Image (cartoon, rainbow, N blue to C red; front, side, top):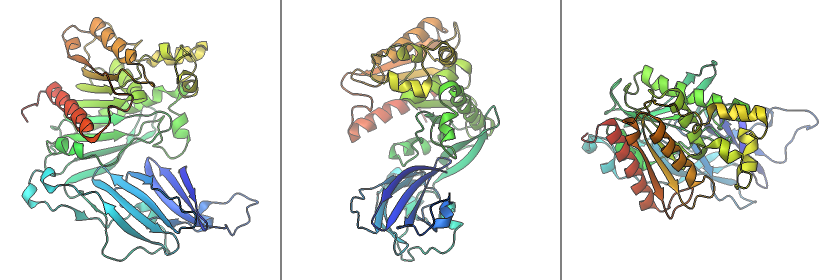
Length: 421
């Protein structure tokens, strides 16, 4: 496990761990009654591990500004559990649910008349279960989720070098059909960031149509057991991220989660490096891809120190002004490795004129080169959508996000030839 965050209170220390891409929270009593002259294990300090739902994939600390408080607030979420705000009393070792996002039952599942709004969730995360001596709130409050409608399972996919890659797969229990369902694979794998797997109501329309949504915690991100997960997918090791993503895509197809000809990929910003490179190396693996504000022309960007993030990115990707590092980056650069005459998947690239992180020209250059170099028939399905007012994180606003999601889903359905379903 690796420590992601911490909060200090008058009588407690709260630690947020990452365990293979999943959050684990615990509190320690202060002051620490131990001889700190020697290294000790956290278990020696008798931590209280916060009980959390077994499906939890995201834990975001709340506004814990009161230093004298014994209550810690956090927002828990997962692909099948709407955001729930939970208060943990670190002195009494109990929790209480403050609020959980309500979801209209009419938007969930196919047999809507037979599905309750929520199902009570009593399963506790393993990190809490295996430890004794802690009590939980025995009252009627329970977090609730849609695990009776949607399956959220965690698999370990072995990459080309035998390293296990965490893969989270979500699908509708009723609508999914083995070997016949379309699906999308999401990935990031950069800066040590854990891939966001929190609740997203927009995905319900895809899941209810039988789609599979999968999240690949490839190396380079924060989904591994410790900080080495990031280092093993950055710098000269960046190609590990690409092969990890490809392995996860192949697993979805080979295990029958997704139809062999209906797998799509979605990436954002630096996450598009892995997808762009994967399409160059395995163009037949994906039927379509969506690259949002993509970082694709990595060599030219890193050779321009006047750009705002170039110097900082030397540590993450390498400095191409050093010949050995240039050779490493050039090997996988999505822009520099587009194959002449190759058939490419349908691709939608989105960019923003006011993006200060990834220049609008990166996506434009990549689209122009793909159209010019690849199969003339396939290149017609490579599109670019540019926002003239938005930035790196979109135009903002709830309705703007819904409009963006609808556009992306419509593109995928058209690319897959299933607009009528």
